[in-house]
Length: 416
Ligand code: HEM
Image: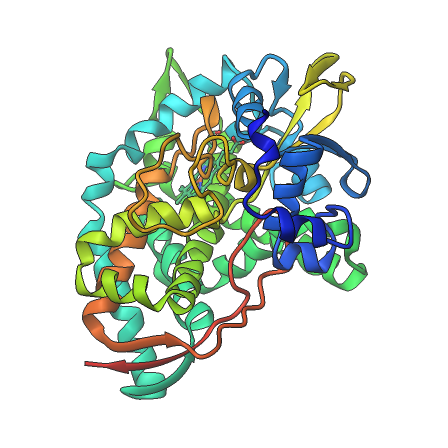
């Protein structure tokens, strides 16, 4: 018997009144039963709304991510951002295939290794403490705030700005630019006003890094932009435009993802008081909690590839040039790979590598950084807050089919 016949959410799945449509509001609020249905009934399914094949089973996702010769990343950025790519002249490495991709990746890899990242730990904790001080100054030692607005949306952008060497007075604008540029992914649904804002942010982020490049090439420092300007691979240096594209990729990659993860952390805590109590009482459990959170509700739900030739997956023919939606979040719940896959289990020892950070050549560069940041923020929050609890179990998730995190999260807090 095929494992996909035994589905823990069979009853839930059979009750679904409609087919998986990533653009549908209900699906965006809770995509998981739809993923379960896809895995069971249509593991490779053509999705009209996004004009792409959705791939939902773990083994198929693994094949797609590891075979760049058939499943290319070259169209990833153009498909995601369209005419709103701030640097359309050169692709960012996330949208390059081997071997050129590897050259570029080598240049930045070193800065993101665990040893480099650990050196940022104290600074991350300081930033978290500062944000909590600001929040207390604003609302008092006990009260209500929005965990997303007042904390999670400010914290990763501040850490990554520090890595890039961005002057602190400019950081407030950053979050808006990143949100707007990533918002271009939903451009089909927007009217002229929203599109004009996105255009403005796309131009602004580019202008900002052009200026920073010129300053740093005249006066190099120890920041990452200076390092990128000076770095050499096989005797060649990055051009000005390549450095700017890389800086923008690091900013875009490093901000919304970690913001959403920290938001989702509090959502899970509020839904699972017993888990919350255990983790609070024993902060050594924070990494296990983050790992299970990343499996259970990953902040990047899917990524995209395009076929370089006719191919077949789970018996479905995909013509050359097809867009492929790789459902990472579905793979993480594949019942053939994870026991009791639809349950959140703090004691789980993952039986297969998670897909949350991708797999293969483009495996997330910022994995250690985001894990360190998230751990540091939760540790700091546990130290500072006697109470930190979501006010309601109901969550409004951000209106996106590929990014997942709470749009806002009212919390009640009390500092020690
Ligand atoms: C919870 C946090 C994060 C998640 C879930 C996440 C997820 C991912 C995923 C799924 C990919 C693979 C994309 C693909 O295969 O096409 C990726 C790539 C990437 N991520 Fe992350 N990411 C996170 C945090 C970060 C941070 C903090 C940075 C920091 C700078 C970062 C930078 C990048 C970059 C540069 C790539 C492209 C790597 C390449 O093309 O070789 N990410 N990330």
